[in-house]
Image (cartoon, rainbow, N blue to C red; front, side, top):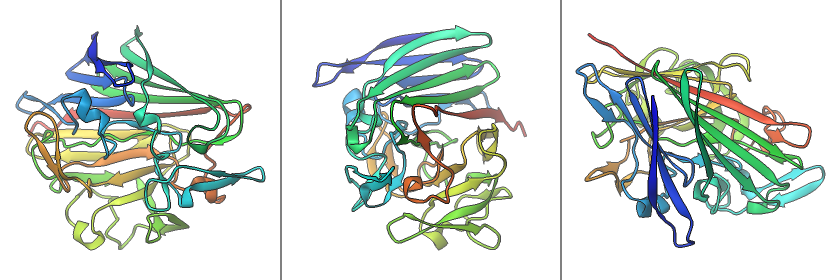
Length: 345
């Protein structure tokens, strides 16, 4: 196991950005201090070849223009908040809007645009990179002074863990997720529609025309959203115009439990996802529109998929949803685990 780092570049603000690489088992994981972003993940195939399975960019300048949120940690509140506002303890808070009338991933200047403080270390059987950020009261329109940390861990058992933690001196909505785009055949290798997906979910959140949850949970049976058995991502995608929906993860919230499994036949790669979070946003890269990626890669619609473990979108405006709050007497702690394997035949 080893951890290395180098200067990735310097922003126009004068802030230095560092790139860390963690190696353990058969995996190599790279992380940028800008946006706490996952920039590369090399995973072997059944033929022994290691490919980078994350979409992204090669240069820091490209990462600063990351309009599709590739690989970053989104916050304070990932996903959408309707009309860019919510009320808490009788007070209405107005957020920055960047998705029509809505706030998406907390609008411009969210956690994905910040340079995080870093600390790398080894502990027991893994190697870790901890990134921390302080968000002052009023930033993005949110209440309270918040301290957030994201810790990435890499293990010889070919597991990648993400642990989120936050504390705030006032009650505040929170929803942290990583927005990695995966292609298990390898980034730049084309469509993910042939990947097979299983979701440990029996319902998804119904959306209105602005992709805001109505508050209704829809059972998956007899719908194009039913991934309770392994199914190619492309099987029913034309019926829904691309997936960008939050699924309700089966099992008890706050317990690390199975969330999803993905299989890519040509490489034999398998990715299993576990989470403590109540939901997972399954997104199929619907708005990838010829984006220039790593080296000579160009990313088009359906060239990557996201499994963003998280609380439900618009939770601050939906009291029937699981509470997504942090405050003086309530810490925020969530975990997600990715486990990689190979089908040998």
